[in-house]
Length: 311
Image (cartoon, rainbow, N blue to C red; front, side, top):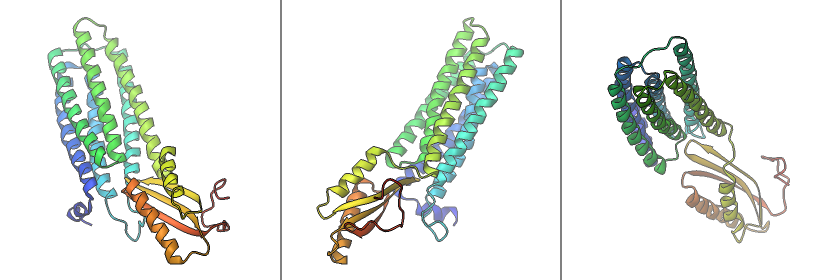
């Protein structure tokens, strides 16, 4: 499927993610250019920290945009559940890249301890950091608007590390200011170590969310309670069992067995399932709902018995 056809298949809720993806690429490339110039002029490790982060951002943003396009593909013969988990793969790659950037900064900081270098051109460095903070804040605002329309893990991960850019750039600005007023060189080195640790923590958090999706972790307890309430409030549902949920990209999958009057007609039982499906779709518009109907009291099927749940 070529790019134009893929674009035509992107749901309206996904288009906001695509806009955020393109915005991230444009802004990250702009930041690389101005930060590289600032590092060349100043020699600041703080700016190098920020530059390293921006280089990673540009690579990650391209991958994020590609993953949004791929995840938007409709289900096909080979991927009947769709392609949504590509977002988790993208986010996991982001985590690896961010962790690698942190290691690079630690190596650079250790080298600077052995061979101190005087910072220069403070004004250029401070100006670039102010511009970087402004552009990063603009991008985070665009990404947050996108997330309000599309719960994209790839964009959420991208937004998380761009949000961290604001903190990193602000810290670099403070370090340049302190150095300009006589602070020792190790302040710059200490800040670089702190950024590396922060990047490691961020990579850990992103990787955790990615693995949760890839390993089909259940939705939150709050979300499960909402689903259960809809089912139990239905007057013709006698009982239920084997509720299973998972997140696939921006879609939610809900699978459950409901028990109804065994003397009920197939049509009437089907109507109950359709009614529940409509209510659950109102709760989660992007959900795929699978409802299996059992006669009340019959729990002998082994379709998907869950230890401790199917009694």
